[in-house]
Image (cartoon, rainbow, N blue to C red):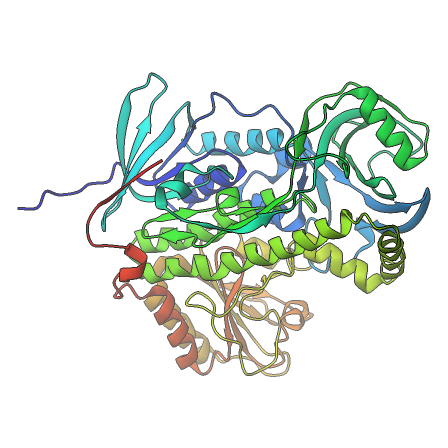
Length: 553
């Protein structure tokens, strides 16, 4: 007789950095019980990652913790490109066409402060990080994951969870235990980071990318006025012989590369690193997942790592919530790999190219770099595109179980794109916020949807998604019906390209899953049947095996 296997917790999260904290918060929002463990004795006091981008601020807004993050940070107002002591380009973020973004900015905030804000939000949801607790081994079964945890007193505890998420950084114990290999390379170049107070003629609160012959220097404003992060390429250093970082060395470096008279003081956190660019071959092994730096490792150029990890957790947890509740097939979880792995690959390719450009040593190539940067940044379209891409606003997911194929009819936003329009249509933004799916039924600008057609689409949505979906009908006419959204001037319908009636399915992560004609329900039925069907079994490839396998860190 087989003994009954009962999980102690729905989700075990290993690693309490920003990725793990976001995953834990979102898991609780989707009704899952959570344990989150971290081998550190306390939160790191170091600033580490320093920039939150526009899309990440949207996510933190939905998670309920953007206000303390904004208070703890400082808006990064502009980026200046300087070469040979002369300005060659400038990007003022508030002047970019961010379209609909409610947070059109880069936010300078130390990772330690981001983690503090996230942990306080998690505590408010009833979950406390279990510190000085490390993963020793894990065993996979078809029903869950058993993890051996080393407690602060050295005792070994076996924790049984339905799901496990490894958010434990570049040296991930979870990744090693799962046997997931990394693809990528190490650049061999050497960079240094240093947080320091700086008096100079530079504008406080703005960033500078100094393209010097001696090597590139980034000057990034920190939240405290007068304090900056220095990031410098050290062409003469070797990875196996890193230099000592002190104030005299930094003073010489800054004065030489900027040509300015500066005064540095109050040296804080420093680090020397050689950029690595790796991605895990798989983000899922059965009931275990990888996210954040456990899934992708790369140079900090562009400040993409922390932000990508936040969105990994946000993409995964709504899917995990549906599957765990039995509303969706386990195959829905394969879309985490299908959607997020290409994001990691593209990010690493982009960061690798940027790192190569920043580490050019040949003088003629440096001159070409300077001229190209100056020429391109003269065009508003280039500046806008750069801001949106770095801000992670233009990411598009491929067709999958969670994202319908490209519609035949034109329209935007399309499946796989952000539902956008949050700043320009605050009433709609409020209706999208939360853990539910949303079916938008938009009257056409010149052709309304009939009551019968709207009722049929609503009934279909609820027959699949039950209480996981909210239906919002966007109409010109005012109505006392709570499901209706008044759009008298057609702003929302124009933004969605609804010249004729349109149905748009918005996922909990605010990406469009489906777009089509609400009067022809078969295509909507097909999409919902794929997402919400719970009949399909776990594939052999996903589970790895039918029995239990022990993985040791």
